[in-house]
Length: 415
Ligand SMILES: Nc1ncnc2c1ncn2[C@@H]1O[C@H](COP(=O)(O)OP(=O)(O)OP(=O)(O)O)[C@@H](O)[C@H]1O
Ligand SMILES: [Mg+2]
Image 1 (cartoon, rainbow, N blue to C red):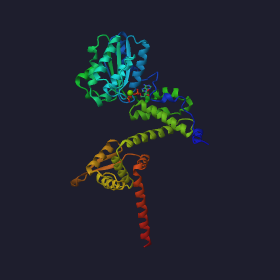
Image 2: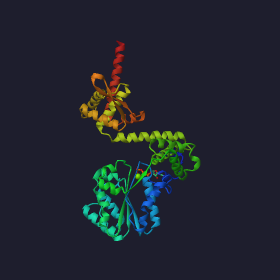
Image 3: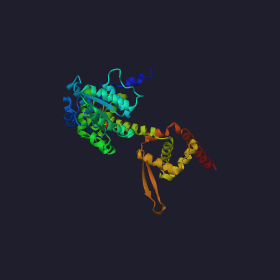
Image 4: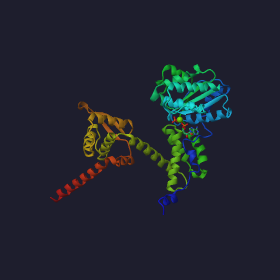
């Protein structure tokens, strides 16, 4: 018998078309974004007559359909002008290419199809720029360039590239370009210089978070394609929608919740997805997200967190001072570098900012102030931290200490 047999036998295939529940899937219909779509379409329609549309800045929280809407509009635009005689739609995800060279390389190589393509590295930015301009100008049409996750470029490289792209029309003689910047960072425009702010944001389109009812419709549309109707129990869709609406109105989270619920049901060998699976899925997603964060913290922060956990398990009051004493002991056992108390206090603040703990400043009258700390993670995550192989020596040491203590107590009894 193979090692997969038991799991294969138990497992029921509930998801008919897995692809549809992936967040990369672009649906043909985007309910509740009709206004945003109409708005953008009205702004860019001149491109079908070779006229330059205004630049647009699209903003809205994560999971509100910005990327899906722009991809959809791109597809529809292509249907209107299949040979791309009047306009071309160019999409760049700046999360993947976040430096000026990468952005220009990516845009250019969607335009240049002959052997003169720009190499991925090695040219000066000026050369890339000039080549790009000459190719754009050969065509005599409008290029709509979507820069999705546009804030990523700014964070790493400043706003020169925007200056460069938004002033390109002053150099072009035949063609025109028009930029659609997309971001979920509400502070993005504050970080731009005034000139670029007004150029990029000639038009603004805002995507608001979905409410529970809208999320229900979105989920229902996807579920109909992904499952046979009888598979999804009563209340599953509305439960997923309610949870996600309360959280952030994020359609991506709602879809993830539905997908993970179905996967849990499949793994259990259940024949349908129920609200209980949704609750389990929500826990799993929450735990996975926190674990992902904990994986990225430094060894020193992990030792601090481990020390807080120890105090928590002893049901002691947790203050910066208490944490430091245990931290010192632990560093000793683990032969780790010992940081000063002030540095450890900083690491405690970082854990607080990550939401792993809550630290409240408490005043003790004339005796000064200290921080009282509470753990903000559940048992499963505590176990995950304790199981880190980094803490193996600690585990051995503490269980030895426990046995010695216990033996001493027994010996005392005998006396
Ligand atoms: N109105 C909608 N109808 C159907 N599916 C939608 C709708 N809005 C969003 N989605 C789906 O939700 C997921 C997230 O949407 P999308 O990636 O477009 O969000 P976003 O606004 O670009 O988020 P981010 O700011 O994180 O990039 C995608 O799978 C998308 O297909
Ligand atoms: Mg997006």
